[in-house]
Length: 305
Image (tube, rainbow, N blue to C red; front, side, top):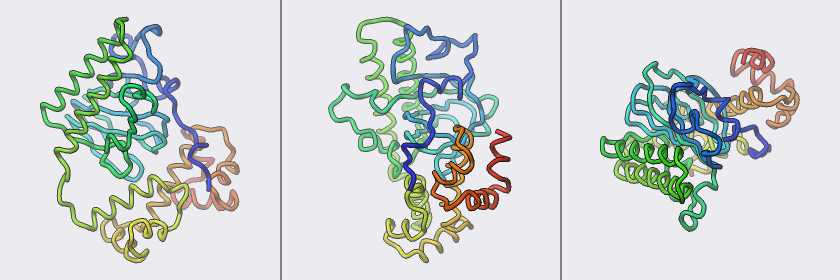
């Protein structure tokens, strides 16, 4: 099976031109920040200049989005989220994601940082263990109360102040504010857990979606996920079908077609090379799969993006 490590991703050093347009009259975070004030492995942006629709895409860094006003739609793997004010969203390196339908009044911030950024601040910081929203099994949408969102905005302001200055301990201070922001989010997460008493079938579908989002490049059969969930394939199929009106196989195919779109958008690989990278027996099989799933050929999709 193909390795996810070989797949195209967006890096911090190219994110700015791919996903954000700097406005000349907005001076906040990395918007119009002189190079000498920038620090490696970290970026902060306001939503002004944010490209409203993109994806599917991948990135090599962690992300936290803070929405204070307006709304947008976000897809993380197979999960869809309608995001409104006082919301936090999180994405994990290597996770397929997309964004759409941002309202004209959208306002907030987002932080991007490399996996090694918090190293040295605290011993043995493991992101998925420390922060449940950076684990595929956790919820990646969080609705905060007024006190929590105010604390988070306060940390954003302190980070921006540090970025603009050249004080001693600047890097450590920014790392500490990022950690405190994530800690506030973690406490909010814990306060709301369990978020609600969802039906057992809905919970199983959510777990199934999360497993597919994490493992679809290695496991393509419904039986693989049924084994992980300790149920029979027939039971898993019945639950997914009754809850979503789609089959379990449909979910696996959706993730695979998202991955194909990432490759078509972000690489110069030929259609044949993509077919083999995604472990299809031959290019014709990949073309048939893509046309059946999307209604068009891989070449047609590449020509319109």
